Length: 226
Image (tube, rainbow, N blue to C red; front, side):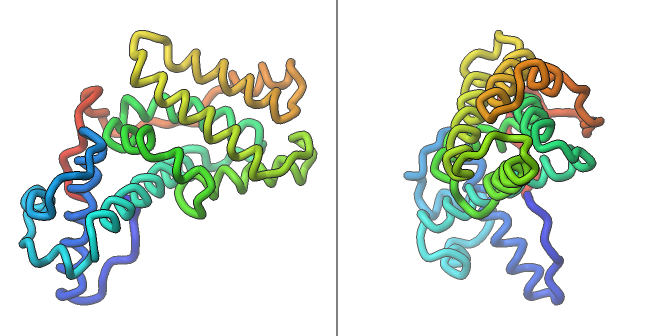
């Protein structure tokens, strides 16, 4: 889950741990089935917290599941920030983002299942990957790297295509995910006005070192309570 400043005292730490446990339980449910009809009692049991604790943090299941989606999308965005740091070319950031998303379907399956199921409704949110993608689009427009276009329209195209790629990765695991990501990235860059030869080269640039701890088995959910 996204990192935040640690609470300053024991009460606040316990309260934060309970909230994290509830959000983690909701994330697991969203990743496994996408079904939000689970009872509050079932959610509390999965989180290993008391039933009454739920209402100390959330007014409803709707609020909890929304917090879980925002939490997952922010983690998604933080992964991009950490792994793609040092890349200054907005076009390369777009292409690398597509390729990283496919790889995260294998390395972070729980997270990416939530992105797959709930990301569309957050394409224009002010958190998670959306605000980072908008930042990179605006940088590309300001520098002349991309053809002038309404950033919100460009974000719709970019976000919709990326989510389609994530869906493809889960629906067709037999396909070469890396190659699909490269091809889609090249298409998106051309759509944004990058010349064809340039788009072809940028989409195939070596990715930064994205080495991470051993990835869980594909399809499994993370077990650590964030």
